[in-house]
Length: 167
Image (cartoon, rainbow, N blue to C red):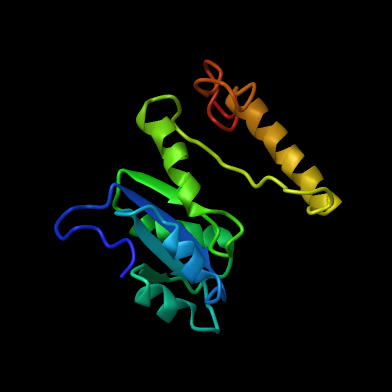
């Protein structure tokens, strides 16, 4: 089995992988989960063999009948027990092998939360509505959290404000 933590040792990081009909992508994704980290595949109602493939590859499989990425992420977070938890799409559009660099920033105290993003490798890969939506969400997060840029050493809400501007 891939990435099975040592017996009686908790995984240092849990990787939550929301999944809906991703049986074909799972082998690629699972082989890139860092060694010793625990993969939690949240099956969001797959009609293919996603759950069986994930289990065969060593993942903990959590069923979630409520459809949607948010519901799957919540179920995975509820199942997580590690000190650090990552979320990664299960469709092979993101490489879980890049997660250690993000987790290291949190471990070193440089950030409380780190968000990765997809980067297009050539022009025209993302439709215009996705680019506009991504820019709008990024702008909203920066304004509400007090983070001026992705290179800020530490992001925190402005004094007297909650994370979402509600105090």
